[in-house]
Length: 285
Length: 272
Image (cartoon, each protein chain N blue to C red):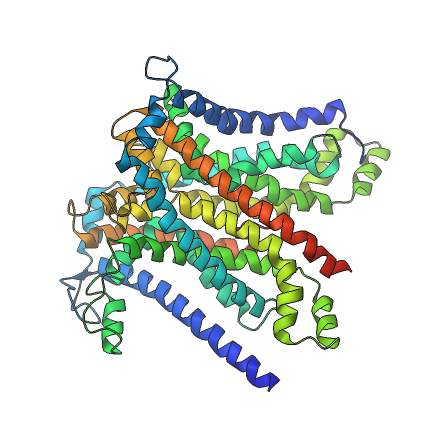
């Protein structure tokens, strides 16, 4: 039964395959085709020109990177120690994971709407900060870069944490015990045993967090300044598609977005493969 | 020394968690209180509590219709996803064949690529075939990330059902279809339940894809909330928060039901 793929079984794959080809691969290829043609269907590079030759549009790439890279680094850097701390399970674990799942489930729109009041000039956060004397006048958290970054951390941290936690709790605890028994300190056990084994998980977590942050849209619209400082690439693509109804340029921007995400993912995965060879030696040798 | 180090770590851990959870609760309670208050410009708590913003929202939106569309989309997406994903998950977990790895990656791709990246080309295609701005378009768009998600959830459940059980049933004379109906389906029912519940929660809170393809009559509650929040000034902020509370309750009820059956870690992407 555990055999090769017989004709009968091939049929079972058809619905899912048709679905992924029609609703994912085809739109992507069609978008690629649109991005290299003009409205009448003749080939052109003008759509990419509209992005790369216009400083206002080109800027969106840097704006997006300037938001997404710090957000991803913060999320992953915070998630690692917390996941390591909780790796053997602990009391109250269920409650903690519940509270981490809630913001993930609610989604950006609700959180952004809530952050507008909660982090606004008269919101609870500013009242609290003033009451304990950290700041003397309200801090501006919303309608700027900070707002978008904060929303990406509030959404991205639980995602990164739960992902790394799932990965790190699968690492055989005997490896750590062995390292400790052989006289390594806690720190060097972490640095030379646990961390190298975590690298593959961290790399994927970084990638997924980055692509999420890079395609940020609702919170950049609601919590940021979509007319300038937080005009991220997704906003540019959306405006070309649904404000100017230029699907060709919008597709070109989407393709550039996908290409940048792909480049960052490949860079991280190359780095991971180089790290991983060392790590498996530590694990097995 | 060692125990002290451990408690330091614990103190730091819980402090950070309290800061995080405190802020999330702060955000949620601000929304809830604001939706039921009047003239809350400063101070810890609002002075006047009122229900008028809910009346306002009820006049502004057809809440029943919004909820109907939201659940209609979620239920149809889940049903179709399971029908499409189950056979694929079965083949992927039972057979070895050339190109299986590539096929798995192809199925995983829509889960990894963020919706905002492929959403615009997808919306363009759905508009081209006159499927967008209709409920069917919203359903089709939402299927894209959910089908791979269901495949991924179902695979380990199918792997758990021993091949021997199927062989035994076949040896005892059961036909393929009977084996499927009497052995495989009942034994993988927990997996299907898990996949269904998680997919419903995910679809209700899916903003990007629904937003890109929905029209006025086919939008879900989260898209209506975004539109209200974006057009700030068109209506009082408390009214936007009232709609936010309705969305919050819908999602939370589904989440709490979901967590009775599944573990929270199943809701994020699992790294193998």
